[in-house]
Image 1 (tube, one colour):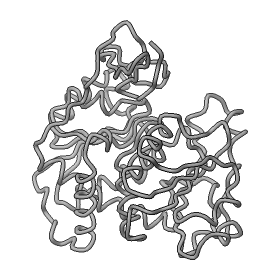
Image 2 (spheres, rainbow, N blue to C red):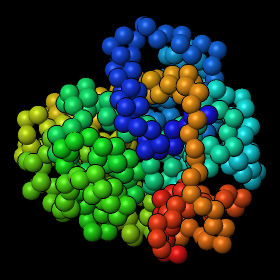
Image 3 (cartoon, rainbow, N blue to C red):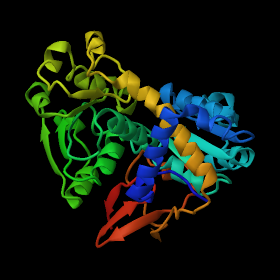
Image 4 (tube, rainbow, N blue to C red):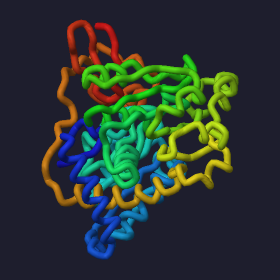
Length: 354
């Protein structure tokens, strides 16, 4: 069956069809009323969420479907020690499509291995967030009119920012996009993301100053410093408030610059920026409903299959990423893609030396 774990599992033409469908739903919402009548969406949110969870719920309700699931694992049998496999197996048996958010990287792929319905990754740790990427791509399509020829600035926590990783990977597949990464040395974008950009011939650079960079940008993608991804309060305190977008900095940008943010905002964008017409992060959340409506329709209607694991099972090899789902769910196969003396974990994309 079909799952959405990583946008890379599908060709660009597939992404474009989902985005085009989202645009059509936005333009002609009445045409899709009742399209999922009698269908059930299961939601497994092991991690807090406002926009992603509610936009999926709104999407299914507007399509005429219904909902089951939890937004706090403490209220489910997870609190009694039930593993991910069993929870997924049960809830997917009740559902036509399953949406999962989890703090461990690779959890969505792990869930899909035994699910009885399509699984949609709504964020797995600091790894990937493909439905936010589709939201961002619909926003760019609607507001900039294109997905190519853009200079995109990514600012903030680029190490742990799954939305940044997913969007970079996606936009690298469109021509003439340039990326500028604005962060502290401790929060630089991971090497695997830079490797992907290089393999697609995308120009990128890493800088430390937002003020000096903002005049170059067509799109500024702000992110919060994620306290939940740090090992200690002290490490978090050292990074927060390094990058704050205010009206003074925004006024250095182009007149047609657009400012996006996956939200929630903490203090990295001041409230006075909200009144500027270039600040589109609230409108961005509305586009999220329409693209998720398109995605739900696509996943339920399409019976094509996606091969989840394509590498070699190396049971004597352990992923070195402590946040990988394979450490918590011991039954999972130790599956890696090998390239010479490098092996890449198929769940979290961590690279290790063999």
